[in-house]
Image (cartoon, rainbow, N blue to C red; front, side):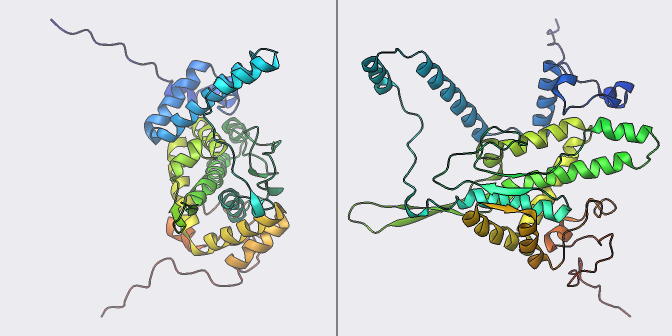
Length: 352
């Protein structure tokens, strides 16, 4: 007697990416796919990239608790006495914010490091943006008009997103033989910029002071891992953009893995990390900087102006060691670098 096998799970048709309808289909447009296809594609991404982890689960629980609190407040009675009784009996899941004190005019350094990572990565790949903006400790979160989330404490805005794959397919059908190669490179650079913020934030050391009566203050230091930041520590909008790019291209998972590896090497490089720290210190006081101010700060660490929008197309993807060393492609306008690029490999000794 044979056991009954469970039915095979439904899968997305792999031939769909090369079918004629792929020329008008895009995972960046929710109107092009059904809810079931989106769920299946998300399961495929999670199976290849790894589960979101405990941080994402806790974030989902927090969202559910906030929804329950909002429903309880909406259904609360109109009598003031009854409202006080309801509020007193309601458990408090979210602690009250701490006093901002004398640092209220400055922004949080972890937020500034996060946004500075995005900004320096945009400078590195030659994608200009409008401004980098953060809010101080006294200010409430703001709403970036072109961002993927409603409210945030910081954002890099004013740049155009990479067109979806169907646009690159249309250009290839019109006779542009290199359209798909340029589309892959541009999408991977977009994921590179999205990864740079959370990875830079993960390299920032946070601290707090533990005070006890009758004892000396104790300073504690810790760091958050990149997964916690991406899925529940302020990088949810970055992961939403990365996940959309992954789903839009058949080879999206490999592109995202390479973009993350390059972004990790980038934020660990001396030139990039020094630029991120200086930019973060500046924006924590100014709260808003334009592209010209960012370019003036970052070029001091890399020794040359930012690459042009198309300078990376013939050289992408670079080696991780070249990105960490701060190597840049030659500019199309012929401007030489202010200092020679560091060698990628040591010279081999001569024999004989």
